[in-house]
Length: 521
Image 1: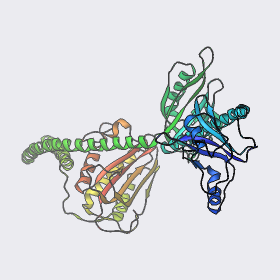
Image 2: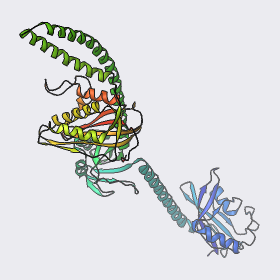
Image 3: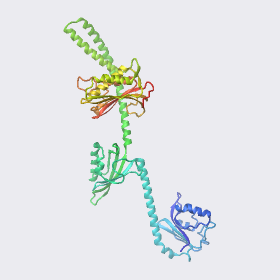
Image 4: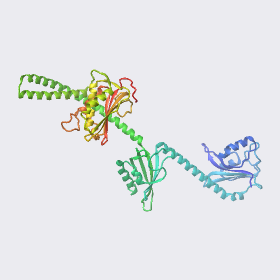
């Protein structure tokens, strides 16, 4: 029966002072300015912060306020000019327990207001309190969901829930996530389906972790594994979780947890380990070079004396004795050749540097190698764009390429494909094929790849060591790759290997660009 009023919610500003924000209010605008203000603000709620008013007393005291003669009531702070007349007012607090959450204000009821009206409206006020509390809980829930969504989106995080008894599993990704895993976002799948997407090498650990959780034997689940995505690639996932519900006997019913994409971290760890390995390799090559150079120098002096004396002795003896001397001289000369290769590894130098056209060098070397390849091996030479050139020794570079091609042949006893090619690349600070000590810039990249058996992981770090070989006795000296690396270093470049057991090996020879070419980098 009142002429106008409002229902509002009570909030507090940073200083702790209460203020009112309306959820519903009668339009009592009395001029153009107040009508414009009402039309623009009422939809989102009008705010009233002046506590020196009748309704302000409700917020300050938390008690009902009845004023049947507002004009003379000392609690009234007056009204704006033009405001509709107020002949009676009642303000009632809306409370949840002892907490003031809102209020109702009404004015101008015929006959005014009294305690009977307050009692009559008590159930209504309780309902308003319940609605306000529900709105606040919903608002908090939505805010929590937004925060969770932002956290999930910013951290590549997903949530999962597991029904232990049925094996059902649901995974919830952020709404704007570009996830491309095989399991659908938000829909139920099964733990078995998830495990099927895990990399074979990691699967046993995931099965063991969930089994321990399902039996209630582990307080928490945590494991790292690679999971297949729809592009056929594997992403590293850190899975964490725990049991969140148990039955009366304590047996697990429901588990929940998170998926965190840690692919970036894993790649960074691999990159760090790769750089550390390259640094160790460089340091090892340096120390071995110093050692090999000292040994080679001493052996060279000894062999010089031996060869000189054998030459003189060869002039003096005849018959079977001469044959023995010749055999001894041949062995000493082979020793001298080994010493020469050791010196190339230890103190690489390039004499008579010339401008070498790599397209010519690759074709010429391929022609020489064809006669030594079995019919089961297909040799493919990929033509380089433009005319890539480097400065150095064509003879020693051809020696490197021949050595790599023969190694490729030996790695494919049953046949396969041997591919050589060249292109221009720019070596940067994170280039996989270059050690940290190699100068950054433009290089000609010569590749020699095979489809053979690959190199075992335990041998990869040793293949450039002098005298290390995996070939049978009598089939190799173990100096081929170490000499090739020495020649590459002498040209200001590097020799790197990329291999996978059962898939093949590719050697990458980096040589500084001698001049600008039209090759695509």
